[in-house]
Image 1 (cartoon, rainbow, N blue to C red):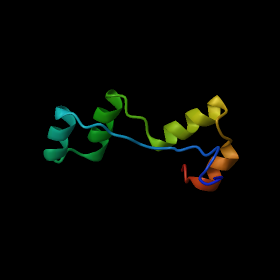
Image 2: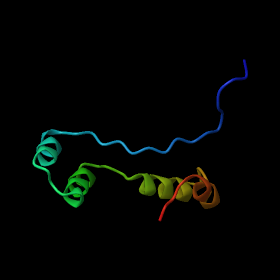
Image 3: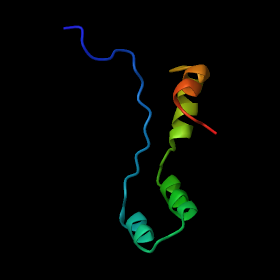
Length: 71
């Protein structure tokens, strides 16, 4: 029917919490510690995902600057 979006690219941050992350969050761990724990479990930030997609040629740096604040 010609509806919807074609050729769009979704960027996302997804954090899957395990026992260790849940305990750190429950203990009010500082944000830098939570981020470090998550990255050790494979977490990729929105900025990192965007940069990888530019390097792979999925999108351009100009397009990302129009849609994201990467500073």
